[in-house]
Image 1: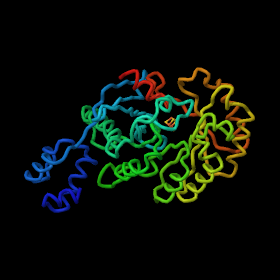
Image 2: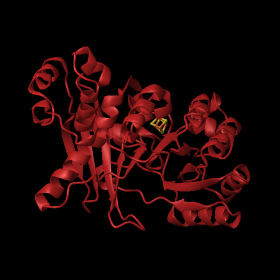
Image 3: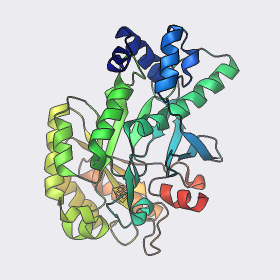
Image 4: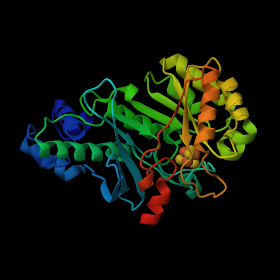
Length: 349
Ligand code: SF4
C-alpha cells in the first residue's frame, strides 16, 4: 500500500491508512475513508478496485449457529465459506470460526471427499481468501451495530478446512495469513489460525520455518500406508512416516501440538486394530487426535462408523494415552461439514 500511494506521489503513511481502512475497518468504498485527502480518494477510485465477494447463496443451519455462503468470484467460479459460532471457554465472547477455501476444487482426489472428486479448477488469490473472512465479519459487525453494541472484531478463529489443499497454494495462503495477522489490519493471532493439510511434506517443512505458531492439522484417516494409499492418493508420494516426521519437526519448531484428523469409516478404518496401529504411530508425539464422523460421500460404500465403534476407537486411543476428541460435526443439515462443500456448490450452480 505504501508503494502504491508513493507511485501516486503521496506520502507513504497514507498507504498505512488505506491498509487500515481496507483490512481493519473492512471498508470497500474509498469515499468513506474520511481521513484521506480528497485528491487521494479520487486517485484510489480511479486506479484501484477494492473487491467484495458477492454471496450468491446462503444457508443457515436449523440451530442458527452455522452459516454457509456460496461466494461468486469475478471469473464466475464459486467457493464456499462457513461461519461457525460456538462457546468459547474462558472468554466472555462466543467463538466465531470461519472455515475458508484455498482453491476452487482440489487435485488430491481423496476418496471420501466430495471436493476431491470434482478435481482442481484454480488457485485462489490472497484477496479471495481474506475476503471470505471479511464477508462474515462485516455481517457480524452489522448485526452488532443493529443491536447497538460496541464495534469490535468478532471472528476469533480461521481454519483452512474448506475446498482445496492449502499447502498446494502455499504462497497465496501464507500471504493471506500475513494480511490477517497484520496488527494494523485484521490483527488475528497466529495461534488462532489452523491449516489443515493432507500431508504435503516439503510444504510442512517450509511452514515450520516461517516463524509463525499456526495450528497444523494433518488429515491422516488411516494408520497404514496400504490403507492410506487407497483413501488418499497423495500418500503414494508422501507416505505416513514422512508426514509424521515433518509434523514432529513442525511441533519442535513452533511449540504447537499437531492435530491428526481421522474420519471414521465403517468397516474401513474403524476397528480396534486400526486404533492400536494409530496409537503406535503417534506414541511420543506432541499431538491430539480428532475423530470425525464421516460426512456425506459420493461413494456409497463409504459410510460413517457407528456411535459404538467410534466410542470404542476413542477408548482404545485413550488407554494408550493419546489425547483424543470426537469432533462434533456442525452444519450437516446445510451440507456445510467437511468434504461437502463442492457438492452443494454444484447443486446450487
Ligand atoms: S480432503 Fe482435502 S486434500 Fe483431500 S480431496 Fe478433499 S479438499 Fe482435497
